[in-house]
Structure formats: C-alpha cells, structure tokens
Length: 257
Image (cartoon, rainbow, N blue to C red; front, top):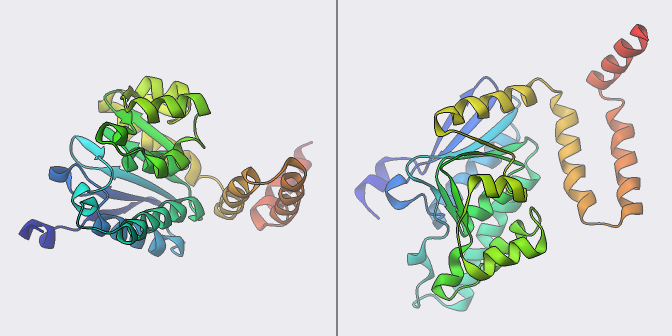
C-alpha cells in the first residue's frame, strides 16, 4: 500500500440536494474493487441507508476507468481457495447491499467497466454512461470465467447476450450496452453530469417512502412465480396507498375529477 493510500479516502462522499455522490477514488489503480475499496463503499452505503437526507445515491469514479474489477494482487496463487471464497463473499455482500439499499442507486459510468466493475454497474438500479464508456466481463482472457459478474449481468441482459460477453471477453461500447439493457442512458462525456442530475432530480421529487417500498418489492418479486409476485405486490401497494403522500395525492386527484 502506498503512502497516498493512507492519505486519500477510498471513496469520496458529497451530499448535494438529496443526492449522495460516492466517487471511487483510486484512478491510478483503475478503481479496482480491492478489499479496502469494497469495504469503504459498503460502509458509505450502510451509513446512507438510515440518513433521511439521502434520497438518491450515485456511484461514480475518477480517472479513465469506472472500475477494472477485482484487484488481481488479491487473487494470486499464494491465496487459498478459502481465502478467495471469502473475498468473493465480501464482494457479494457489497452487491446485495446496493440492491437492498432503500434509496435508488445510479451508476455514473465515465470510462471502462470490466469484470467486477461491470458487475457493479449491473447491480446498480440505473446507469448513465458517457459515449466513451466501454464494458466487458473479460476474466476469460486470463483463464478465469467471470462467474460472479455473470449473476448480475444475466439479470440485466438476455442469456445469449450475456454468455457471448462472458465467453469472448470482448468489450462492448456504451451504445451497445444501452441496446442490451445494461445502461439506461448514453450521452456525450461533456453532458454526463447534467444527464445524471436530470435523472436524480426527477427521482428526488418523488415520495421517498413509496420509492423505498417499491424498490424492495421490485427485486423480491423477480425471484418468485407470477402468482406469488402479484400477491406480494398487492400487499405492498395496499400499504403504500396509506402512506401520507399517497393519501394526499389520491385525495388531490379525486377532488379534480
């Protein structure tokens, strides 16, 4: 670890008008998801979960890379299978933290996102990318199939498209990523911040409790059969209809009609 690693935070935090920007802060190391980086990011997310001032979270990065994935120095031959299983388990906990976060989490992708970095984009609820961004699950080029990124990737794009990326390790550009469903919006690099702010301001204007309940239900219902999904959704929607904002909104609409 360099002296700079002790001086600079792994993740920079900036709260602006209800939007918490979490910026991966190791551009010289391509923002790899080292143990320290994952721990710092998860810590920021956990702290934000109970902060009522945080309405939306944006995961961003400095430098040419959004994230180049796992730190390969932490995956060397000197580490046992048990060590690596523990490492991937900690990565999984970070990814699940994002999905379970009560606030929407948006990836702001300015550069390359590879392997676990691509997984990070896929696990965010939404993603906005610069035209210059590129995506790959390229572990296969090193003899390592990106099995854990495959879990997130296959829940964003079709099976055949996911397997093509996993089997070839080839990069796709931002426009292709959007067409596959990996990212929501693609804009010129100079417009990236404005596009992110437009999206976040739209979400911040909506009721926080409805968004939190709706996001949680959205992911739960994907993992069950359609009948159970409707039952779960009906229960959540009935409770949501009694939230103060929903009651006020319904009353306002009915007075107009």
